[in-house]
Image (tube, rainbow, N blue to C red; front, top):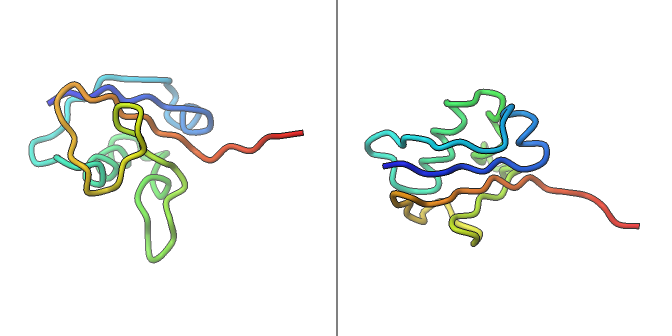
Length: 90
């Protein structure tokens, strides 16, 4: 299965790319499993995608333009967006 991963803002800087097509390993079928795979694929993202010891992950994950939960399934051709918190205003 292949998914397109989009990296935004600080995540883009850490990943060193704005997007990529990723061949998803066998057995990775949910957003949560994909998040763990992405942290292994790009060690600079470690600790940002997967919650650890009661601490929420810093990056929201969207699947096909809708925010996704860890248990949501992924399918071939999905577009996955990694969206870090942003600050702004005036």
